[in-house]
Image (cartoon, rainbow, N blue to C red; front, side, top):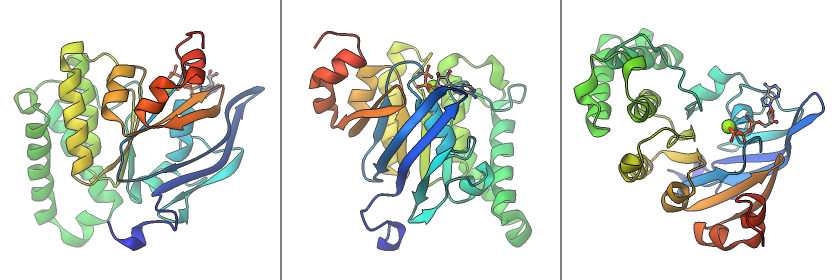
Length: 258
Ligand SMILES: Nc1ncnc2c1ncn2[C@@H]1O[C@H](COP(=O)(O)OP(=O)(O)OP(=O)(O)O)[C@@H](O)[C@H]1O
Ligand SMILES: [Mg+2]
């Protein structure tokens, strides 16, 4: 990361007073947060808190009613998903969406090809680049332990492997920032620590991360910094230790009396 990649505050992504209502239901209420690339950031909060809506706004799937977003110091609020993706922001969805009837290998090739088209790689550099994409797919699948499942249709993968397959597909675009919406949901408890290790590897490889999840022990273990959302607002932020010890968070998020 070079100094020019950063805003003056050092944040890679900043949201400024984001607001989004669906009819009378305010899903995101005045959300301002900074995301720093050198730490794994988490976003937690009860069902309906507005977490996914915030990811949708950041990645262009929803337009904010007001507020703005800066990525690398450039305003990106209101851009289309493909424009934001082209700048290096990738995301997974709470419910996996990618190519269910294709085999895992096919889905990786499609993810690589769409990235190549999006970035003009195919037209300018040709077949050498497509060979590179296949090598990258191999490396990613090996690393995530999915190499034995290449010929399995995506919709026949076990829930945990399907989550990893989503992660694998998003890594094909070599994003600078990856937003993961509930990567641990449906993952076998015995596989969670491996998921944490893989997420740390992804972060160490230079990809900034923000993770939504309801599995608190996973989040507090893997994240370096945590934002807590409730009723559309950020109600607390801090290190995992600070969040775990916060009476407000215990009360609002975990339903435990302060
Ligand atoms: N497209 C939409 N149309 C109408 N209401 C929506 C839409 N998307 C989200 N909402 C509402 O906005 C609020 C925030 O939803 P959101 O999905 O962002 O919450 P969340 O924190 O991701 O919850 P969960 O943990 O259950 O995934 C909820 O009240 C939800 O019903
Ligand atoms: Mg959600």
